[in-house]
Amino acid sequence: MKQKRWFMLVAILVIASFVLAACPQPTPQVVEKTVVVTKEVKEVVTKEVQKIITKEKVVTKEVVVTPTPVPGEEKVTLDINLGTEPPTADPALATDTTSVTVIEQLFLGLTDLAEEDMHAIPELATEWETPDDGQTWIFHMRNDVPWVWYNPATGEVEVVKDDDGNPRVVNAHDVVYGVKRTLDPRTASDYAYVLYVIKGGEALNTADPAADDLDALLADVGVEAVDDFTVKFTLEYPAAYFPQIASMWVTRPQPEWVIADKGDRWIEPGFIVTNGPYVMTEWVHEDHMVFEKNPHWPDWDKVEGNVERIYAVMVTEASTSFAMYENNELDTAGVPLDQMDRVKSDPELSKQLTIQPIGCTYYYGFTTPKAPVDNPLVRRALSAAIDRKTLVEEVTKGGQIPANTFAPKMIFGSPAGDPEIAPWALPEDMGGWGYDKAAEEARKWMADAGFPDGEGLDILLMHNVSEGHAKIAQAIQAMWQSVFPKANFTIETQEWKVYLKTIGKKTPLEDMPHVWRLGWCQDYPDENNWVHEVFNPEQGANRPRLSFDDPYVGDKIKEFSETTITAARTADPEKRKELYKKAEKLLVDDIAAIAPIYYYTQVVVTKPWLKRHWHDTPHYETWVIDWAAKKAATGK
Image (cartoon, rainbow, N blue to C red; front, side):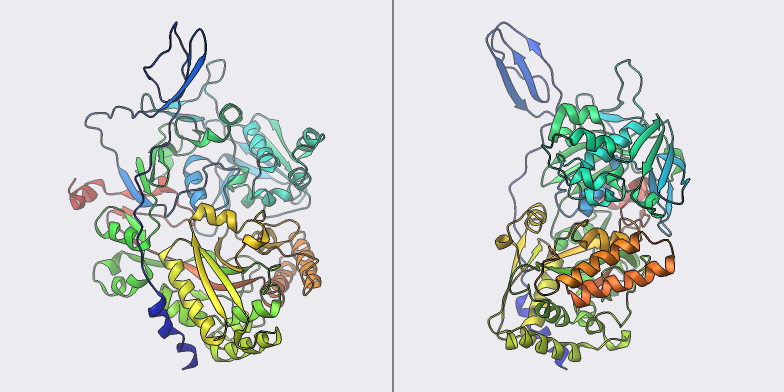
C-alpha cells in the first residue's frame, strides 16, 4: 500500500547512540560565615562562598562539603528519572514539564487540580468567591503553612523565622509578590503571558524594564493582600476558569527576602526556601536531584503517601532508563518505542504496564516567517504528508490517537476528531481522508507553492535529545521523503535547555529551524490555555512567530487572534465551543502554523511495590511504597 512505502526507510534511518558524559560536580550549597582574623586564612570551614576578612582584604573561597550521614538512617526512597536537567526550579521562570515537576514538590499553589476531572480544589486557599461573576476573585488562605529551608550543615529541615524569631508562614503578601515578580519585565518570565488576564498584567510585563513608571505599573496590577491571609485578584474581563489558573506555578507565593538576597542562585540547595511537601537537598547538575520529606508540611496526615526521599536522575535515553527500571534502579519508567511489543507480551512487564489518555498533544511547529515554510501551502503539505495512523500503530505503539487539532478531547471547547478541521490529518476510520488522499493533496499543494515533488525544498527539522523523539523524527523524515522525493530533509538535535532557547522568540530567525518538535500539556483544561495562551500573536507564547503582517495569511492570523480573545471573554459555554472550533480550524488548517501529530497517552511501567496516582504532574506525597517489598527485590 502507498502509505507503507516510507516505512522501509525507517529501519535504515534509526540509529541508536550513547554518549558518556564526565561526572558532573555538585552545585555548591551555601552557608555564609564571616571570620575575622589578623592574617590570611587558608582553612575552609563552611559550605560554598564565605567571606574571610583580613586587615588588608576580603578573600572569597568556594568549597563543597557533604553533611555527615546519620548512622543507620533509612528513608523510604522513591527512585525516578526526570529525563533531563530541569532548566529551573524558579516558579516565575519555568516553562517546561520537567521544571514544573520539580516545582510541584516544593511550592504550594492557592489551588490544586483534582485528579479525576481537573476542577480547582483548595491548597493554600481554603475557599474563594467571585462577587461579580468572574471579574473579581477573592481567595481566603490558611495560616498554618510555614516557609522552610534545608540546612546543609546539619542535614535538617528548619522552619524559617522572621526578625522577631517567629515562624514565617505563607501569606497573601507572598502571593502578591510572586505574581508581580512573574509579571515584572526585569524577571524575564517567558510564561508571564498566562497572567495577562489579571488587570494591568500585560501593561507591566510588556513595559521597558528601565521605564521610569515601572513602580506605578507594579502598583496597578490587579492583585492585592486584603489582609495577611486574604488575596484579591481583579481581572481584565470575567474568567470562570481563573481558579484553575490560580493552581499554576506562576501564581505561587515566592520568598521575597531570599530572592532579594541571593539573586539567581536562590533556587540552589542551601539557599532555597520552600513550602511544599518536599525540600531540595541536593542538585548535582546534569546528573541528579534529591528531595527529602518536609516534616513541617501540615498535611501529611491527609495523604496516604509514605515517600520520605526522592532520588531523581536525569537520564535522557529512554533505553537506559528502561534498563535501570528492569534492574530495579527505578520504581517507574517510560517504555521505549522499540520495547513496546516485548513489554506487552511479557507476562510480568505487561502487568506493570499502564496506558491511559493524558491532556497533552505532540506536535511539530513551523517557523512561519522563515522561507520556505513561510508559505502556508508548504506547511499544510508537510503536515498532510505525515501518516499519523501508521506512526502511532507502528512506531509509538502506545495507544496514541492521531491528532487533527491542537487540544485533545478532554479539554473544554476542543473539537478534536471533527473532520471539518484538517480532514487530511485523520485516517478514514476517524472520518478523515486517509493517508493516500492526504499524500496526493500534499503533492499538489507543494507543487502550487513552487516545489514540484519537493524540488528546491531544503528543510531543517529539530528536536531535543530523546531516543523516542529521534525515532518519530526519522519516521516522519522518511514519510516526507517518500511524498517529496526531490526535497532535502535534515534532522538536528539539541540538549533540552539549549533547545528551548533556540526555539524561543528572541532567537534570530536565521538560527531557527524550519520545523521543531514540542508537546503541550494542559495547565488547566480549557481551550484558552491552548489556542490563546500558546499561539495568540499579541498575548501568547507564539513560538511559530505568527504576525498580522504575514504576506500570505495575515488576515487569517488576525481573525484567529480576535476569535481567541472573544472566546476568552464569552460567558456562554456553547458559544465558546463554536469560537474555539473556528480558532482550531484557523490555526491548524487555514494558517497551518503547526502540524498536530497525536494526542498523548501516559505509557509507563510501575514496580509492584509502588502505588502511584495519575496527576499530569506527579504528586509524590500521595505515592505509597511497600518498603519491605522494595528492599527484598533490590537486595537492600
